[in-house]
Length: 329
Image 1 (tube, rainbow, N blue to C red):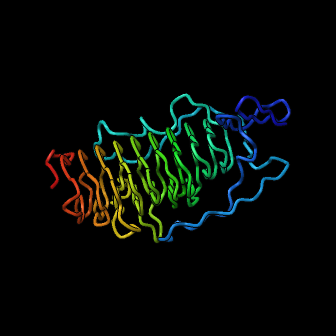
Image 2 (cartoon, one colour):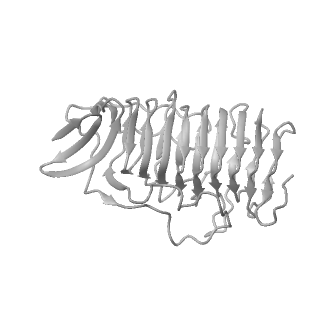
Image 3 (spheres, rainbow, N blue to C red):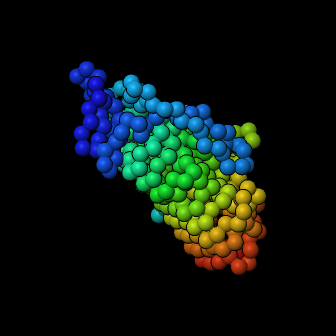
């Protein structure tokens, strides 16, 4: 039995309430949520083609919430060793699903209705956003190793992802992929992926989030944030830890902007982040046509150094080492 009322949708089976609460600004059509098609490979250097989406069937069974909701605040693996000091920066205590939120189980979701709000779900699979002004809030996405637990499709505008945890155990894939669509990520907790966030889009902001405990996989590049293209990318106030303390593995980079870029990066702003690890913590820079790196703090676990080559015209100031306070030139 399906019940619809004033912009919200709930499912009932018999007298027991089950299901995911998914709200939209003017009401939610069941055609706005569909099972995603086969996902593209994350290893290809070229932008990934959009998946074909099957037309929903009349039985409206494209989303199948399961079991009763439970009040929970998902967190990272408690056995993870202590990390370098990043006091004052985002951590698992300040990111992800907020305490006290009740999560309801759901299968994978494709959203194609503008203004949809996805809130309070435990998604076992992935979320694909194909409409403008979609919000994903207070939601845990358990990707199960899927290529893209959250993917913002080409042409999408103004996606908002906040207070979300992406857990892609047993590892692999890209936690959040801006695949040609614009948006903002804030207060996210992203881990157990090959790359935390990949940007192949304009007008993307990543702020106050915690990317950590990447999983090494064959052929993977292993970056907290990887930027392949884009104008007006802002990375502000995050904790980006490619370094994995449990395996003493620096991975590749906190921010990768080198050989993988598909053209010049314009107005790249990187400010007030804590970053630690990587071969170089900031790898590359020649692809940056304009931008700034200001007020960032670096840990000691890069294999070779804080940054590799970068054009002289890019603003670089007030960046320092966490342990000594020494400015990084």
